[in-house]
Image (tube, rainbow, N blue to C red; front, side):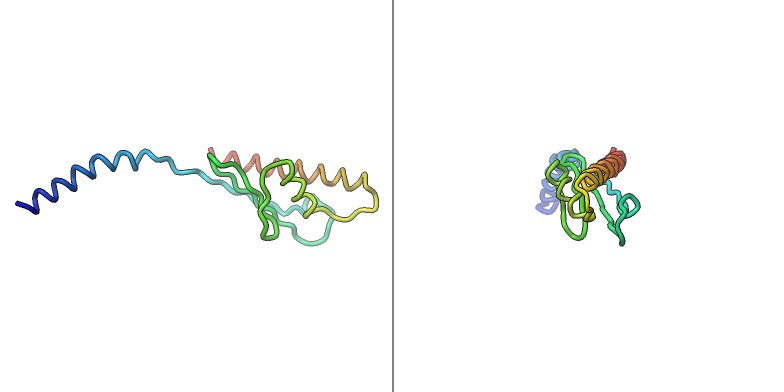
Amino acid sequence: MKLLKSLAAIMIISLFTLPFGACEKDDNESCEQQDMSQVLTCDGEKNVEVCCTSGSGCTYKYNGQDYPDTPEGLNALADALGCTYKSAAEYDEQKQLIIQELIALKDRAWRGVN
């Protein structure tokens, strides 16, 4: 009889806790990767990955380092990806092109989250 009461108590507790645990929504994550050397005129592969998670935003990864999806993070990543040019005007144009490509990559990752 004690065993039956114990099992009944476990079942009742399970019935109350199961619905609350089942209501939690898992975060969806989507990642995209691109070789930025297709955009840049530099030698070697420059693979960038961006992962977006519902509820927490996106993070870029390049060369083992994480970069946040902020203007500062994009500028730092563009600097890390960029090449050395003789002219400052060429460097600024290249940096803006890199940032545009990174944002497009992030947009593709976000489409995978939904």
